[in-house]
Image 1: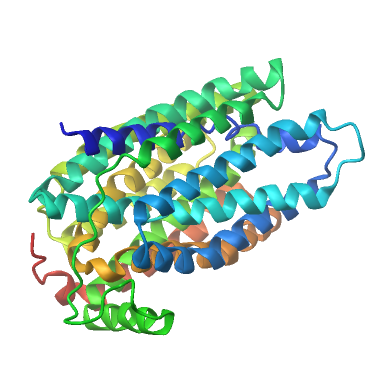
Image 2: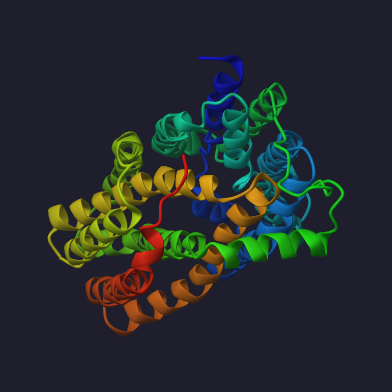
Length: 401
């Protein structure tokens, strides 16, 4: 294993030291915030991530991706440090300051979204090892999930000892990640254009290039749309299933343990993804759609073992889908627009989520958790089948390796 791959693994490991993942709401309430104010913070975070995705991808395509990742991790660290120090402030707490810190963290996250994949793929392309992309990406995902599950499981105990200490640990992790990524041997692959380099392109020209590439190869849109459907639904379930678990009699401690174990079990999906590379996209997506509908049936049950099994399999599907789609999309995208298009994928997921979360919340209040999970899951399943039915011929076109 060469130095740059080790650096990539180390960067991903420390970027996932998110000890506040399971206690963020508790932290906010400890500061004296109301649930409405916490909701405003979450909305601010989601909105900034949504509007910042594509611009940050364009920045990464125009300038050094390694430096963009550095600033992303550095801004994450600044946000974490501020959230750690806030409880020690003896004056009146400014809600606006919390909005700024959450917003900074959101903006920082957009800088790394898709940029790390783009940088890795170009590096492997340079060293004639792009056939190793899925393996390396899934290995990085396994390390990330191990760290994330550990941080989730231990964050609660650390929170009890000192409720803002979780952010101090995150500050250290982000700072180490920022410093580490600077040693990556970055490679900016030459553009397919004869005269214009990404650095010399204006913003409008760069947007046009990305648009025409999406228009030219419709497979990209199919990959993006299918991934968006599965990711948006899974993220929504992760947010709302805690309430569903509570209604069937599970304790808070049990729910926390389930979330940690499900995150850890995602390692299986990340590992198996390397064996799916050569499966035709139409067959792979159809199989995932069918299994997805099965998980919707499971999580709509009231028996704990069935609901937990469905939740676990749903997350397993997403963890196995990510390396597969990332590999194929990176093979279809030119270097000059790689991070821009990958960021567009994240933007689309954010847009769907903004509409989906309120609908799911309304449905739960109108009916219940089980019926809502099943009804909306069925809608997403039908959308997947409809997408595959109109794009089968496009997906069967070969993707050069």
